[in-house]
Amino acid sequence: MKTVLILDDEYLIADILSFALEDEGILTVTAGRGQKALEILDRERPDLIITDFMMPGMTGIEFAEAVRARDSNKNVPMILMSGAQAHLGAERPDLFVEVLAKPFDIAVVLAKVKALLDMDK
Image (tube, rainbow, N blue to C red; front, side):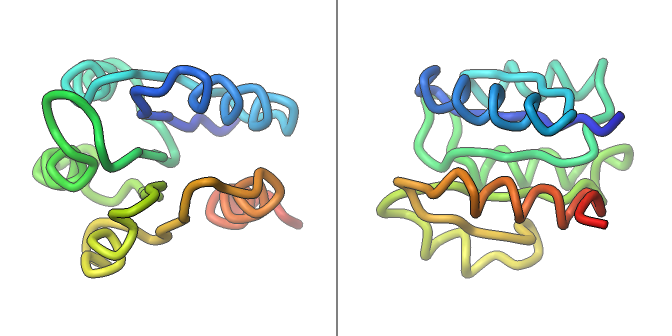
């Protein structure tokens, strides 16, 4: 079973994404802060990471850079979801395979996640 790490300090958004992905048969792990998500990466091996941009402690870009610096996670695909800062993620294709704007269309998110996890067959 595939696992997705969801990092968003807005718990309602993390819960919506988590419930929608779990309905598709995807395991999820959530975190509200970048440091907590890095701790989760020490235990879990997610197949995909979805991160917000604006969060306390570190931005989504800082988090993604920290993930890429770890040998065990440097190839995990990451999606950035953001409102006003989406353009900053689009400038970093070395970090993010997709950049999705908030508010998001859950059907679009599910389709992107399933394609990246190679589950759309």
